[in-house]
Length: 241
Image 1 (cartoon, rainbow, N blue to C red):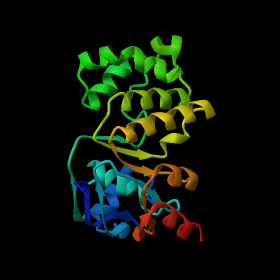
Image 2 (cartoon, one colour):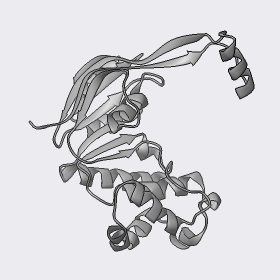
Image 3 (cartoon, rainbow, N blue to C red):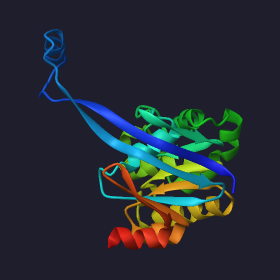
């Protein structure tokens, strides 16, 4: 099977200041005096696995296990402090829905802004514009500034923009929990369409049912280390057990 994502011995360490510094002035003074003390936090430790073309792989683990950090490393948002990641194909990361939005601009303007950030051309976005609005269910609010939107409306619009194409690789963090129950079901159907179309998906969810239903394999992370990688059902059973 052709490999789309290759994660090799990836580690991610963060330096954290031990002192309780509440202002930039305190930070500068402490640094100049040489009194800044750091501790290292290892968010990921020697993680390795592959994802093949068309595979849907789930990530499971408790909060703080390193799942979101790993997705950011694979998406290229964070550079690992150790190891390497190779990604073969265009990636659409759906990590923090709406993070590329301008709250003072309207929904309509944000479609073109966010679409451009994701690499879509203006002509493509114009062609898909009606489809994006229809899927997001924003309706008449499309010409209202985003600061007047609810968080659910922002997430729906972001999801609609991100999934309007069929990317080769989709990286998804808890995105199927946005909106009401009807929109969640619609989001899930759209994800299934993408998966059925051959899109490679790396997928974080706290719902074991979603992992079992949608993933062929799963990776279990605990305290930044990989505990298990294999059949999704078996990994879910071990994680629950």
